[in-house]
Length: 328
Image 1: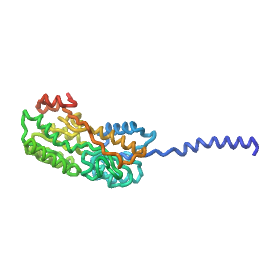
Image 2: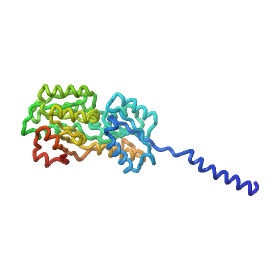
Image 3: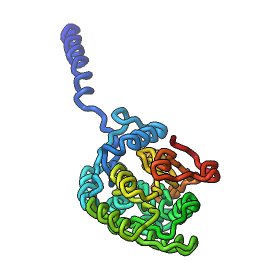
Image 4: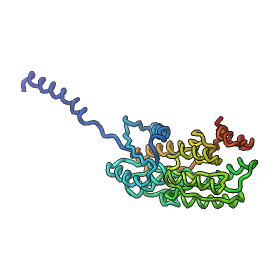
């Protein structure tokens, strides 16, 4: 080959190489994000999740992609949403809420799953043990149901000056937390010596009927169970509690921030951040079955003084001193 012909060939080849590189971009690992709740009300927590991934070394659009699936509080949609993520062969599924975790586990026994759940994951069969989950599932438990008794006690203490003889607990019959919430409510009622009504509510109309029933039964205080459906109806629950003038304790701080009276529990942000860190570790090669289920070490009491004033309540100094945050 003549020197001039060789240089022409070399030049044309060099011109093709960058085009080939651009035509074949590297494939990013995909995280399947399955959530039981409504997207609009969880934007701050989704951002916490992205921050957790970044803390673990993964930035959305840079070295990882995220496929978002929202059930909008309709648990019947979850199996199909989970199956779609499996079909897309995502690298890991992060399932937020007990119903989402249950759907994800039913959909695959091979794709790694990281859950956030308020329930006991051993009791519900998500994992075989806390320390050694085994299989393809691990995650974060918020132990939201196990502290229901504490919520009852805190609300009872707040109302001691005015007195309360009848209380109620609102639970979702479609939730894996349902039976535990009922058991916890019975224990709490016996401990403080009050009459306790357990009301089931899984739809908007159920919520309306439940509050009307509480008014008829002269319920003096309400404890709302930890459930993703109730989280999606946060504004409605806060409004109903105010309308019927029923002092109410909620499981998460988002409720008193929205105008509710008080909350006690761990933070949802803890679960979203911790689950993202676990997803990052799995993307780097860790096996989910070797990662112990994480548990919260901090619980926070949030009190909304404006809501208390609207109900004609004076918050005892003892509770104010215990509160992690007081909204004025």
